Image (cartoon, rainbow, N blue to C red; front, side, top):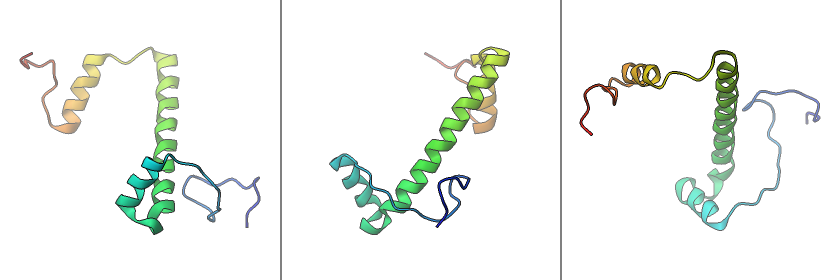
Length: 94
């Protein structure tokens, strides 16, 4: 087993058991989706996604600190190009 000083990227390294507490409804919803034996894997993936989101939030904050906030119209135009949908400001009826 690796000691606490070993650095691993999210999703890497050996598994380690911990005890967590979840609201009963949350645990029930997870078990309904993945069954009793899939809870750990589900929570591992959820934690990895949250770490990715936190890292992205930090990256965006660093960018905005250096460059100011992104232009909402430019963001909408780029989103439209990525998703293939018209941007909301391009002649859409209210």
